[in-house]
Structures are given as C-alpha cells and as structure tokens.
Image 1 (tube, rainbow, N blue to C red):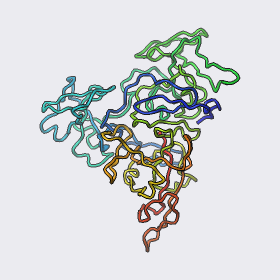
Image 2 (cartoon, rainbow, N blue to C red):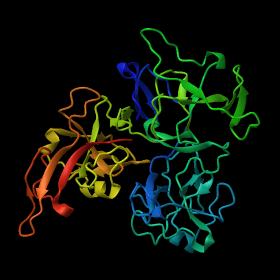
Image 3 (cartoon, rainbow, N blue to C red):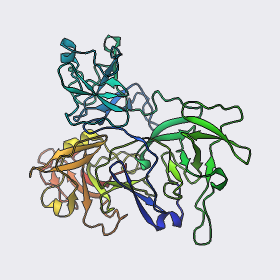
Image 4 (cartoon, rainbow, N blue to C red):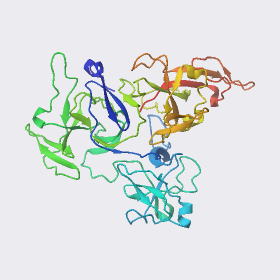
Amino acid sequence: MGMKSALGLAVLGIAVIAGGVYYYAGHQAKPAHEAGLATPPGIMFATVKMGNAVYVPGASSDQQAELRVFGDPKGMTLYTFDKDTVPGKSACSGDCAKAWPAMAAPADAKPVGDWTIIARDDGSKQWAYRGKPLYLFAKDMKTGDYKGDGADGLWHIAYANAGAGMTLPDGIAVQEVAEAGGQALVDSHGMVLYAFDGELKHDKIACNNTNPCPGNFVPVAAGGLANPIGDFGVVSRDDGVQQWTYQGRPLYTYDGDIDLGDANGIGLDQRYQVAMITKYFMPPGVGIRPDERRGGLLTNAQGMTLYARDKLVFNGTGGHNARGGTRGNPMIGKMIGTSGCDAQCEQTWIPLKAAPGSQPSGYWSLIARADGSQQWAYQGYALYSYSGDKKPGDTIGHDTFNLFVNDEHSPMQQVAANGNASSNMVLDHGLGLYWRITAP
C-alpha cells in the first residue's frame, strides 16, 4: 500500500456499512453508495480449484486457480439449471430434486439485492440469484467439490462474480476490493474507481496549511468517441476531458493508490466513495481499519484488532505473513476451530462472540462453543481480540507463536508458550501455531 499522509491517519471516522462498522482514516465518512448485499443470511462464499494458474514468480504452472462461488452454510457448491426459464419457478422436481436438492430459504427470508425467493411446488422456499434458482448436487461430498458442473450440459457452478452479466465499457472491470468490503469498479490496471457526488467544477480536495492535500482524484477519461453503455455515461469537463460516469456519478482514480487492492482514497473527502457494485456481509460491530502494510485489518465494535489462530508453516521465502497471504487456508481454520485457544488462553485472547440467532453469510461462519454460545469465524478461522492491545490500531498480538518439536519417538512437546495453546495439540510437521491479524 502506498504511504498515506499524516492527515489520513490523524482522525478516526466511523460509518455504518453492511451491518457493521467501517473505520476510516481521515474525515468522518458517510455510507457508501447503495450497493446490493453480496450474500443473504445462510449463503456463503466457497472456493473451487480448477484449471491452471501461476500465482507467484517461480511457482509451478500446474497450480490450480481458486475461484469464488456461492455455497450453502457448510460451504458446499451451489449450481444453476438451464431449464429454469420461467421467472419465479423451478423446473427441477421429483427425481431431479433428489439429485439436485434446492437451496432452501428460511420461511422468514426476505429478498435482498440480487437475491430473491421462489416458492416450490411442495410449498417450500428456495433462494434464487439474479432470477436463477440455486441447487446443491447430491454427489458433492466435501467443500470444494463441483462434480455437478456441466452435468447434462445444463448444470453450472454459481460463481460469485458481481460483474458477470454487467455491460461494462472497455477498460473498466469489477473485482474484489478488500479494503472497501466488497466488489467494486476498477480500471484496466486493476486500480479502484471512486464515484463523485458534487459539481465537476468543484471536484478538487480542499487544501490549506492545516489540511494539506494527501493526493488527487484523477478523472477516468472516456475518450472522444466513447458512447454511453449500460449504467455508464460520458460527461464533458471544462478542461476538455470526456469522463466516464456510473449511474450518473463521475468516476475517478486516486493517485495515492499504489498497489493493487489499495483504496487509500476512502474517507479523504466525503464526496468521493468507492464505486461499489456489491457489499459483503459483516457481523454487527465488525469493521475494517486501513493498514499501511497489510491493506486493512478487521476490528471489533471497539475498533480493536481481530486475530486468528493459524498453523505455522515455513514457506522458504523468509516469512509467512506477506500481504495477500493473511486470510490463511479455510480448511486449516476449520480444522483448528476453537481448539487453538483453551480456557486459560481465553483469559488473554477474547473470543468474538455472535449474538443468538446469528446466521453465516459470505466469508463469515459460526463455530459452536462448548458453553452453547457461538463464535464468529472469518474465512474459516475463529476470531479473537487481544487483551494486550491497548488502543485501536494496536497489533501487539501479531506473530506470537507456539512452537513444537517433532520427535518421531515421542509426542510433540511444546517448547514455547506465548499463546497458551494446549500442549497435546498435534499438527502436521510439528511446527505449531501462531496468532496473526486478520485482513479483509
């Protein structure tokens, strides 16, 4: 992430977004432009691996790409059916419904964003995304399976891509912007776009001696021959530039965004908001705090950093917490669950409890605790705050370890106890566990 100015870090603002709290550096920010919720209660993001991709220089080219799809509360892949052509009705019943169970919607479920509810012939309710009813496949046995994709040439994975089907101008796309908590418009270089509420002739950030300009918002040029397309229009500026607009709002990049995924323009001027297409669910009180190196930190209702307990794996590159790698492996998170922090540990690391009646959604799931309560998990990892952090923004608990010796003749022995994990925990390779911040 590019360096933010002192101004950008001086004042903490709060705005409510997607059921949670979003912490901004800079002026107090107003809610983002209206964007539909990416997932209703009970619909999760899941991951399937397919095809080939090279993730980092030197990586093997036969590594499979990880694609985000919609899943049920257990993370099982959801599908659409080409024969569902009548709006509000499913064409899959009888034996078809045995092989392809409907993604049930609760009796009290309500439509939200691109999500609607259809009534099935048996009186039950089923979720539909952009008008297409969603189904599971009976032969999928575990998360990540997608055995139903392409079946009979009629069944297809339900990809969680907000940009699918959108009419977009050349040079503009939709991708996940973690710091903004959803999927948003980006330019041809992958840099986030901002929508402006105001008059074009007054689109400069106010600057003075006590409020120096941290950067500039730069108009997204449309080109002299560009024509309106879909929700995108073109406006002529006084400086002669033809500028793209989205839903009537002029679009800009921010020259303080340096790395892919940066959204450093958030909160600098209330008139500029990330051009969101869809918002991700956040538990009440949970927010995102901008972070210089990591691109953002998840925080609790008090603004304190949230942590996950993860498996320590040496990757041969001199580190394990590089930016972009702080979400971890959801399967590892689920395997650890709450066992990575026992009762003694919880005197220092405070679980992020979920209110009764909470439901999983998006990247957020729920873990049942021994006392009958539930704990929020993000990307499969149970979340905690750290009592050693004294103020919002502290990350004192990051990179504290439990190391284990792998002795083939005896059980693994705990040799360091910064995190107070149970001494009889057995992990592959015997390296142990560590605490890490959670990035959105």
